[in-house]
Amino acid sequence: MSSIIVQFAIPRDTSFISKVSSKRRCFTAATSATSRDGQHARCSLQVGNEIETERRTGGYQPTLWDYDSIQSFEFEYKEEKQLEKAATLIEKVKRLLLQGQRLELIDDLRRLGISCHFRNEIDQILNTKYLEKNELDERDLYSTSLRFRLLRQYGFTISQDVFDCFKNDKATDFDTKGLLQLYEASFLATHGEETLEIAREFAAKSLHQRVVDHEIDDIHLLSSVEAAFEFPSHWRVQMPYAKGFIDAYKKRQDMNPVVLELAKLDINIVQAQFLEELKETSRWWERTGLAQELPFIRDRIVECYYWANGMVERREHGFERIMLAKINALITAIDDIYDVYGTLEELQLFTDAIRRWDIESIDKLPPYMKVCYLTLIKSVYLQSQLVKGKQLQQCFPDNMISAFKPDTFQYEKVSSASHNFQSLTNQLCPPTCSVDDRRSTSGFVFNLGSGAVTWSSKKQGVTALSTAEAEYVAATSSACQGLWLRRVLADFEQEQKQATGIFCDNRSTVAIAKNQVMHGRTKHIDIKFHFIRDLINEGVISLKFCSSLENLADIFTKSLSSEKHVKFRNMLGVCNYESRGSVE
Image (cartoon, rainbow, N blue to C red; front, top):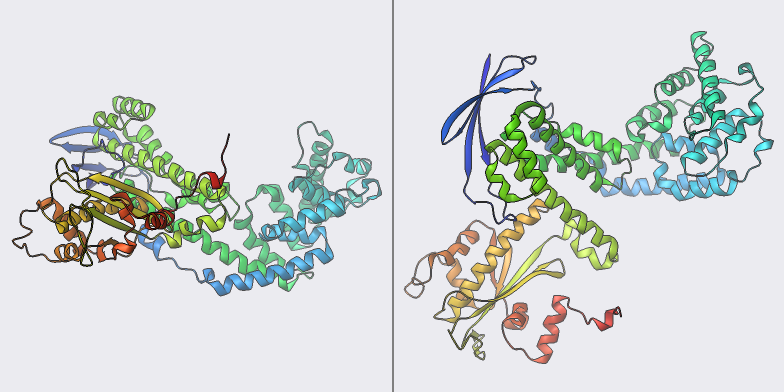
């Protein structure tokens, strides 16, 4: 018998949920497991007082792929030179396909996993050359079956009547290749197509007899027949089986070296893409902390991604694969809570909380369920925001959203504070503070790429004694907002590597923030406003000086000249509604 002591911590980094207490809640769990076949384990939860209960355990083995191993994987086929080489080979194969227009080549491209590069060309060939062909002139079972299968696989309508001319023939009248194609084509039958049902039984019986009698001499053809008996080719996910077909294709006499080279290069490029998607999914799973904080659940993030890869096959749908893998992992964790660990009373509370979808329900849940419930709500919230962002990209041209691509997810903040007098490059500004309480107005705007995403104009809660103090309070407020935005971007897999710059038009404010010594002129400032100093020391924030001519936040705090107002308005991305068109 072995014992395990595990410490759990409910993360407090859930700033998007304002009603959750910011206190760090910790509890410990002590479990003992007998063996993999054991059904029960000792478990104690400690939240203030120790409580011991009998809990079941699934006896799941630890994951074969830990986080560090997954993140350490590297693949050289994601470099630019490899992509350029692949693009050159694609053009060569495209010319080859359009010149020959052979069904065998289309089928080979599909089995090699590279037909996705030629969707338009294949549709054009099938539609113009093979769709309107006179079926009555065909007496070749192999060509008829291959044509029928490819047309149906690519969404064209073709009748089962093309096989009527073979109904009176015997199995000995057909070669093995023709029977194999007939067998695979029969699995594309729709409801009520009796001819294809009969054809499947006929082809299966004939092929099985030839395998038993050792009548198939070609080893590659024999392996194709055995593989078809297991699964028809169009039922298989392309990429996992492409490697095996590549090995068989390079041994064929009619092998095309350009097609083979493209297939080898492409499968490595796709593997590199899938690996990056897996690493991103693994980083998300690590950040949730579910595997560490709930040791009774299955840690199977690699398996979840592999399943999603089979469900969403097209390589351009990486976002959907990652999302589906995350959903699978959450479902697996919740399934283990219901089937393995939770008591009936706890599960009823958990079910009610999910049905209400209310963060206040978390107070009624036991500690281990709070971890899962918070992760579930946070994940659903973030995934919904990602989906909205993806829909936004589909609504606007690429040149309008280029600034929002992942490699350009950098943002800056401009802060400003107006007072009854303000020293700006040795000039005085008109007083803009409140005449009632003499409090200044703070303003800031955050830009993501080339567009403003959040902004504020708000009267300060304290009365500043100087312009520098008012700017200092505004800079601290902007820093807090920036810290929250950095965390939001990190949840969207866009972690900021460099310090975020706050641009302020007061040099004294910059000096106060960078000077850790409390001078006589600043000792009266509330200590909470010195939070910006900690962020500067940690490299999170970088306070910089900018001229008032470029201080975009001034538009939120003071009256500006018409020319300057129009300039700042354009910099914010505000456009004339009438110029964009209106709806009556």
